[in-house]
Image (tube, rainbow, N blue to C red; front, side, top):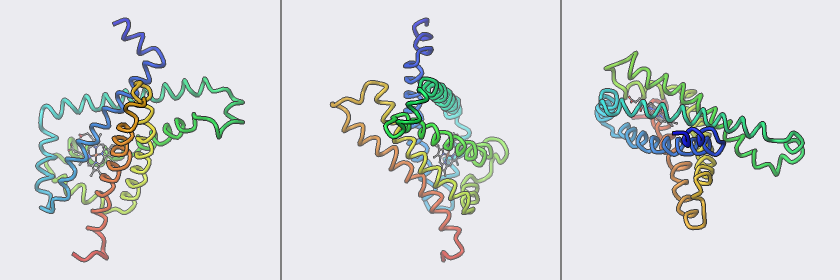
Length: 223
Ligand code: HEM
């Protein structure tokens, strides 16, 4: 117990928490994207609504939701603490005169993209999760998604956020495996290939959803 506490208090311990929670959140993205693909089933939302109903009522899923939110919290808090510690450790002169050589730039951009993804997440949860769990219980989630994505500004916001999510995952994935000591010659090619799935394929997969509903609702689009 004491050694666990000591690990948490050390800066490497916080980095390990940031990495493990980040990788855990990546697995959520795979599950979330796979379920959301039902939006494309072209059955008026029947399959997607059944899936959404299952997600909001199944006991195991509800319990996993708590673990998921704990994962987000651990990632955000440890990310912020590590970023603050790096900031404090960075000498002023170095920052001012050697900006181009400063590897801290990537981590600063990661902090920025992470913060915008966080804002995206708050808006996203407000639109879908709060309605599904509290304000619109029993109503069609498919209709909610269709309605939300009929707003072009909302779609544009999603597309920008997904590009930033891609950037965040690109750097985050690399540095997570670096922290865990797995980014060595033996695994580097495999890890880079898996990373592409996360920072490129998954954000593109999510981006197809607002794009699809935008076209579906588009006045120029003839059905
Ligand atoms: C762009 C396509 C997306 C669509 C159509 C979508 C749709 C939804 C819907 C309908 C819900 C409520 C689900 C339920 O009833 O359980 C939900 C929840 C959630 N979404 Fe998304 N989502 C998208 C992208 C994302 C992205 C990119 C992230 C993360 C960066 C994300 C994170 C979450 C989280 C954390 C929840 C709450 C957890 C849960 O209950 O499953 N979503 N989303």
